[in-house]
Length: 345
Image (tube, rainbow, N blue to C red; front, side, top):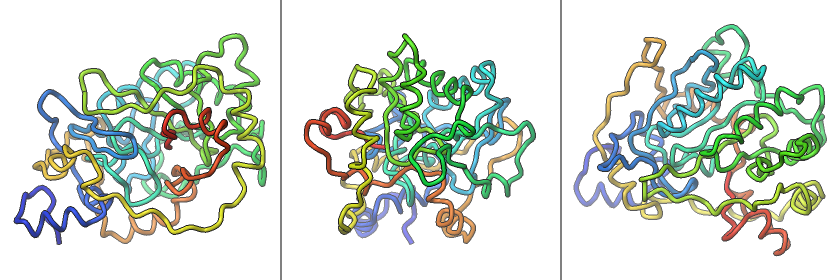
């Protein structure tokens, strides 16, 4: 078995180069130290890694972290600070508390399941279900479903499941300058467009995407003074409530595509070269969580992780990278995806 964190002989390095990167990063259970110059986020959201990650505590004043066995509650310090701020300020808007889904792995990088992005520690999934006033048990955090806000069997929001408090939460998240994008189901974007009123600038950050009917996915801009971090092209400046949304609400995005072989998994050579150093860096001892107890870390070989990842992948994770290849008319593709088709969830 490959020993992560040890720079071995040429045979070990050759194994690293040929092994899918998701397996290499998925085996690491502790963050890497910050790199020189405080560089932390490296590369693009769907092709990168993370040094100096901070773990979101399992419990906070106004949040609870879900799916602990996945070991995906790590992020750039700015992401952790923003989640804590959003939880606190949304409480003042009437949202009881956040249920926080996946952030990133301890060293970022590709994941074994569920996400094409979340690789640089700047992405977070926030459930559209409010946190209960009581503390959830470990079992509840693993098994509690993330319910859709859509009417059953439709792509239309159910007003009984999505109301003013949900709208205020998403609007609050979009108001932060460091937030670059928020991915939601097109039906949610439709509602936001209808109720936004005169102040519509924040709507440009709200990006329709497949899935995302039980959570929204926020992405931060690259922090200043971290030159190895690469932002996507910014979304169009208009509110996105015209032709772009009309396309998403049509039948075209939802037509089944002929089956094609999945793309090969990323390897280490396809990531930024600095990710090799991140992967091989000595283990950094994680600080104790705010609650005073060490967070539970699950190992990739455990039956619990395998079962949870399998049975829950379709419930509350983002769409995988096969859905990034949906074909669109060229004139709409430019508006929806931006330069280079770089809209990735």
